[in-house]
Length: 290
View 1 (cartoon, rainbow, N blue to C red):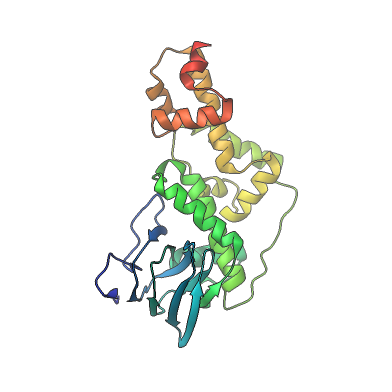
View 2 (cartoon, rainbow, N blue to C red; view 1 turned 30 degrees about the vertical axis):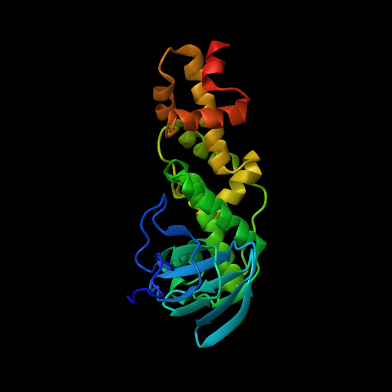
């Protein structure tokens, strides 16, 4: 794998090694704020999405796949570099952007499970200075979550990663893809099966794939049908049920709040307190006292 080269020497930019686990094994999100400079990168097994956060447009030269773009990149502008595509970039001023790396393996998996597409034929097209408000929103949500550690919100990260992958395939795939739609929600027997599983594993690290596998469905389609059935996303429903369990333990036991938080699937006392206040309008301590 070709390594990054930067001129002049600066903090790492456009890292191309295997993505470390930041709450999710197939995804990495980084923010970079480099001074003027240039760099090259070649990520063999990862697709890269760049989203500009710069409040003032930055003069930029991007070169990839035999094409060159020269112009300004401002807040919300994005570029896509497919896996195994060398990229050269030069920026003439202080830059600020997100880099989201998604493994080619995961994109193939989503194509097979969600779109019934041969994963070996999955290919993205390079993009220069493109706009996609949905991708921008997903990128910012991922960055916010991964800043918080992400590990305690596995279901949320799974959902965002699946939506990100489907969006990339739908809009930037080399082969036009029509995403199938399903209406009506989950059948009642499947919904009961999923809800019973969640109730039995509230303290565990539940993934979207775990829930989708219960009803033999792709994670992307499961998430949509679950929301149609319940009125909220799997992640939001899980948090709500964890708070409800915490309420019962606070009311009927004298256990430490930290122990209750960990048993209900929260990462810490503060994590429970933040979400408890969000769902109930009060703190665990005040709830117990009342």
